[in-house]
Image 1 (cartoon, one colour):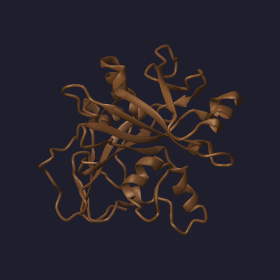
Image 2 (cartoon, one colour):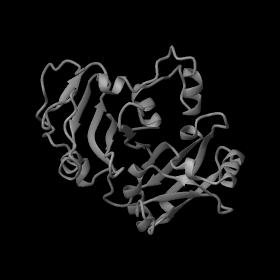
Image 3 (cartoon, one colour):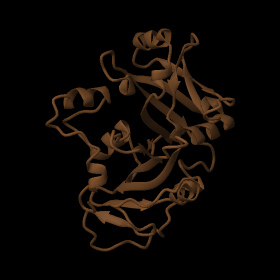
Amino acid sequence: MNITSPKTLFLAWQDHESRSWNPVGRLTFNGKIYTFVYIEGAKEAQKEFGFEPLMSFPEWNKTYCSTELFAFFANRVMSPSRPDYRKHLDRLKLSAQSFDLMEFLGRSEGNRQTDNFKVFPYPDLDSDGKYHLCFLVHGLRHLPKCSMDRIEQLQVGDTLWLCHELHNCYDNKALALTTEDHYHLGYCPRYLSQDILDILRHDPSLVEVKVAKVNLPPSPLKSRLLCKITYSGFEGYVPYDHKIYQPLTKEKEKSKNLVCPM
């Protein structure tokens, strides 16, 4: 049973030159109101890479509220009129009957070819104190054919192993995914790295990754392999509790009667 409330997503922005992904905002939904705020990572991205506020959300320190999903995010949700809509939901292991906008955005990453933003979810917490999160495996386009063939042989429920690539020259926090027979299958998304590394250093047995869905060709590479990570926190652990995820605005300073920004 999921007891996380409200539902939370983070917005990440990629700098074109460095290719660095930076968390810059937080979207929440309490069942009635959508709320968007910038987080400390936005100011760090501004200082290091020149990130500026979005036209939809022009003020750093304002809390934006709306009864409708903000257009900036709504435009990242596939239209049900698309001929491949049902197939896309199936690849993400989502149901059209119980469709949830926030769940779709978090699992699909809200990618658009026209910009350099993506979204990622806050993990669900169950009544046993375990966190759960589904994610699409990254980096498949760099894999050799033998690894791609091995992915096609995976079964739902298969366990995958995490390997910290400390000497990865592109990302020293990279978490590679491997099979028990040592096939490299890609990487966990970067947004998971810091939290999962913290837990692995504390106790590797607290983290488990299993195959949730294998989408065979000709499905797109970016949605070929869906995994589910389950983990327990150590004493005092709170997901995404690092400074960069803290809101710039004070939680109590809510904007009043804001319409949905375009």
